[in-house]
Length: 368
Ligand code: ZN
Image (cartoon, rainbow, N blue to C red; front, side, top):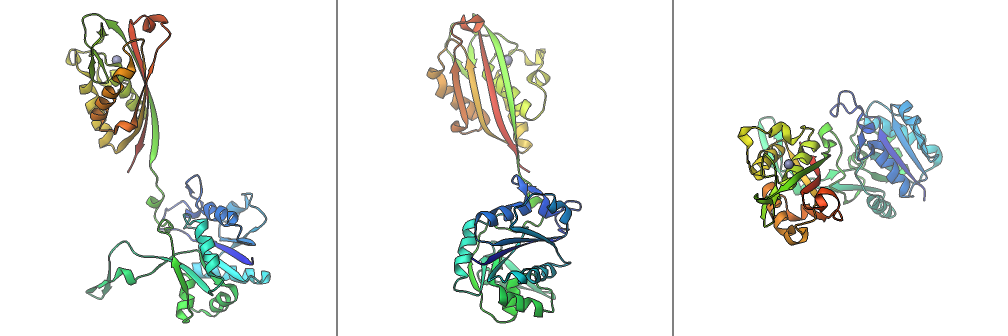
């Protein structure tokens, strides 16, 4: 094993963000560059990993293992690549992998595939095909290109060190990747299937991920005679119903409060005060505008977990009905809704069937 891994991280990433250096942006729990470092280390394929960057102070503050060297890069990508090759010469590498830090999503499997292929080839480059149709413009004329004959070259690209070194020091022009050197000099490259997920992060919205929030809701209503019992929008035969300005549906009220909690929108009383307007309102009518607003703001519910706290009625008997009702009110699938029944060992008001309580936790995600 005489492989060396070069990570090019000296780019200014102007298209990414005015102030943030792309390679050090936090993405999937670590800096973009650290994904490449961790994977190259874990692959155990490399004697040394060489980072070429311009922000050396930032990197030197981090505690990397000894197999990692950090050097200063050049102005353009091809300058940094050449600086790396000159630096590595003293180690007499057999193979060198060149990789852009802006591609954090390659797999270790791909590294191994490249390494294997390099035993028989001088240059191995992973490629993918364009998902978009491509047109080509010359002056005012537009031509169609057959996208299946277009190869999109990715990194890591791997080469016999000597060959790449000789091509790189003799190249006068700035090249956008090492494969270009081989192609310009008519030297055969072995193209292997790359990974679609191994996209180059270029724009800030390439790394913007969705955000998930949680909300909690709680409600309790007194049970009184001569009122219908509604739970989760379902009318349930029972000796009493829930007292309240509305129909007293503790499940739907707790769901509303959980949603308002997750979106930082105060509480149910803010939207449905005890005024004449809402006297005897059915709770599905209260939930409806709350759900509509939630979806309008690009939030999606991941799941609802509900504890219904009562001695009677038995939740197991009505579970499916209640879940189906909540499913149609929220447009959630039934497997996103869980309903648990909890008795209180006949203790207190709930134990004496004088009240029913409910607590709900919700997880929601916002997409842009
Ligand atoms: Zn209530």
